[in-house]
Image: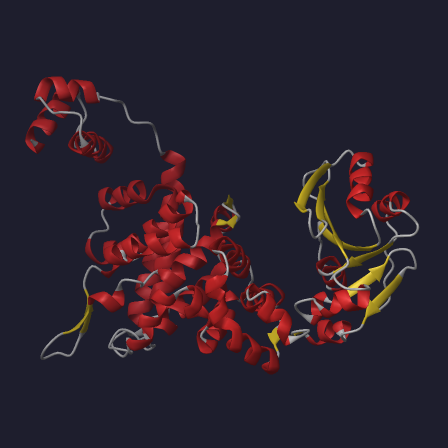
Length: 462
């Protein structure tokens, strides 16, 4: 592979690194360069003494931010002024660069580039694996030493669209149990990067087959016991993964306003990644609510949406998600059957607008989840007409929401909370909040227009 890295940044770095110190660009930057992908993070390996001192001088010259990551192992970070480009420097892991590369996770990350000699070092057939699209472990002991690499293999498979070699899958299975010793913050980061991939459903399915999925989300294992039924052609765990797949497959055909909404930054990634996570978890409540009706043999999952929403909270807390992201996932799980139920029961403007207000900024997300859920359930009782009518109705709800947002106006406050407390003797409590929200809903529905209407309305509720 012909490669030359002599950009201005590299020249600047070389000018501040002592001549008796060897410096190598390694890992992800080289991988991404081969794949013609833009990369803002560069990792360097230095061979020599006084590494921290040399990098600190470099940081000062670049007017960058110097961060000590691990003083004992001499690992430091330099964040450039644009706050996008990031340079990590580490002392060589071993006597030389060849030993360092032997300690890498996968061959696609085991390339090194000698900045002084402008030569590429490939001791692990890394270029061949990059060309073939193969993820292969450099050494089994490297996976055992850092078991997060078990999950990282699947993350790379999702992000790059690569296949994990059979030999490596066997290694991942051998050490998957060690994931329980990895911090949940690190697992969270890898999992959300996995969902950024275009084919994350395929990878999640592979993780199910290897058992790795149940090491990080053991609550999903119960879904392996729920079989197909009249409404579902798949076992429950496969239905959950298929729902995720349907979201991915239909993303490119969504209207521009939907794609823009999903690609909004949210937490460490985008709404789209969290929608995928919600799809995987949307039927959490089904195993615990599963009953089979006597006589008909019908499978029932009463209130699985509400129960699943509550089940998600401790799972997401364990995995160190933020409050906003936890609320988002819980909301999607709780309401994922709401749009389809509405289409069947009440398509009046009042009912539809009430749904838009209740779901608020997550309206688009919930409708897409409902759509993917419908497309993933093709049991013998679900005809193509049933699917087409449901999807058509959901598309109308999606388009209607765009118009609803454009025409939405602020609601005049007819009664304040203080007035309700004074007039009706209501105390400061959750009940007061419920009355205020109910009054607002009635105004938006057009049932309450004047202050007298508002007084009568509150009186009727009490």
